[in-house]
Amino acid sequence: MEENITIEFVKEWIDKHNLTKDSFDRIMNDLIYNSGHNYIDNPYLRYWLIYNTYKFRGMLPVELTDDQQVAINNAKKSFEKGADLYDCAIDMMLYDGLTDKEWAKVTVAFLLWAQEQEEE
Image 1 (cartoon, rainbow, N blue to C red):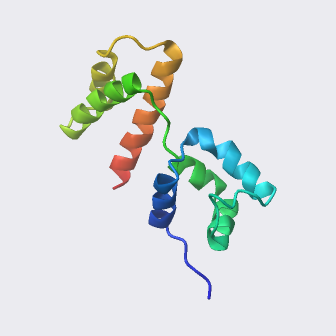
Image 2 (image 1 turned 180 degrees about the vertical axis):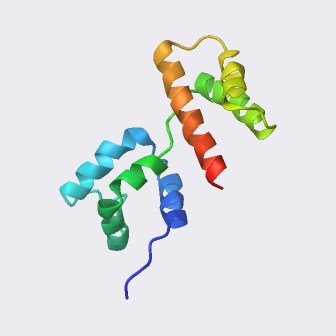
C-alpha cells in the first residue's frame, strides 16, 4: 500500500530531526548513496525527497544563533502587527552586534517566514 506523503508530514519530519538548511547537503548525499537510514527510514519519504528536492530545500529553516533569533523576533512582532517589510527590517536592525554575514542570514530567514505567512 502506497503511503501519501504530505507537506505537513515532511514539516513534522524536519522538526523531529531538527533539520536546517545546513542539513540539506547531508540529506541529499544520503539519498544519492542510499544511506541515512537514521533520518530517512520511510521509503515513500525517500522518493518524495528525490522528486521534490527544491520544495524540500525551501521547507528547511535557517539555523540562527540566539542573537539572530532576537533580531528576527523583533521583525516578526512588527509584521504580525501589520507593519510592511521595510518597517520590519528597520525593527530587525535595531538589534545591534551582528556581522554582515549574520544580518544576511537573518534577512533571508525573515523573508522566507514572511512569505510563508502571506501564503497562509
